[in-house]
Image (tube, rainbow over all chains, first blue to last red; front, side, top):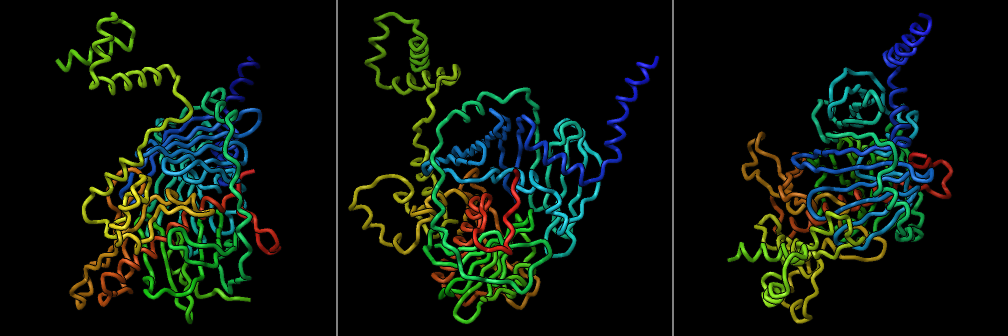
Length: 310
Length: 209
């Protein structure tokens, strides 16, 4: 009898714990799951009127994280991560590697990092439960603390804590971007393709030494939680135009700020793409400040105006 | 006859034909492609494919893009994508030199080409009747570089009333928008592992440990 009671307790307790778990703990468990679990997820990505199917595999080989991302439609486009090196294999150029412990293009990097970093900009709020990809999912809202960034909704698998769906929304709840798992398979051991990937020789990490330090640009104003991650000067792809470059992030939203000599044809003062990417340009004397990022145009305009050289 | 021919090839791949049929097959050049494909399929099913397969997709994609109708106004000529071309032919393409090719490779940014999911190829201005405040906003048309070729339209703010622009200026403007958006997307890839070295007040981007 006592044994049965104990067994019952053991069964009931985790469920109760999940009921009372605050949103932040859910997100922390997600971050951990994304790093620890071995799984295969078939995902569709919706952006404006594009739908892209992709497959993401993650596992651990010899205690190193190995991940593989494949875009299923169109010309072959893959990315492989072994430890802190990500190699992009694409159809029209030789494969190249960069130092990164996250494959860009699936879940935001912030999902598998410190959740406390996001707390400055967002509030974590528990939402309802729905079934996604045949699994019960718990929704967590990331509500922006101010009007300078977009909000997010994340659905987590209640068994594994892996993300099942992710929406990016404007302030008036318009959907900008969505990533949805359609099949999630938890694996017992890393799939053979990851074991192969681990053994494979990948191209050396590209030399980023040529990213010289840029000028000491400062911002008199930045939305709370945003900080500078990179500054350098480089030439734009394609146009070879020399620019001063500053990258800003609050963990989820990424903004690029460029300072260049003003071209003979002005850029539009503001522009919004349907997947939420905005561009704002501001002419200062014979220079031009251009800000690009998935945030409201007002944010970009204010950032561009607050830029100054120290 | 053709159907019958296919069966031969299939049987031959499986090693189920006699010497005479093989000889006939060898003489039939039409079947060689099929022969190759069947072997490829067989290899794939047995998981014996080599690490890299040299399917030259790029050439056919470039050709397909060239055939696409008018949305693409600065026509990036196919030779610049991948196909080697006789030197004489480039001169014919004089207009192309004005347009900076999207796929031009150089330095660090050689890795840039497919980073952007789409490239904007056109700004179209629909408000010919400027007095109407509710007239549609100018729309940017994009062309996906990967995946399906359905165009995405982008909307510019109502601030921009660039009716006075000539065609060349419009091309130039959309090219510049393009380069900034592409560069932004490339930076997203490069920045994930980035740490700014000598600036103490700067916090590195949070990435998973």
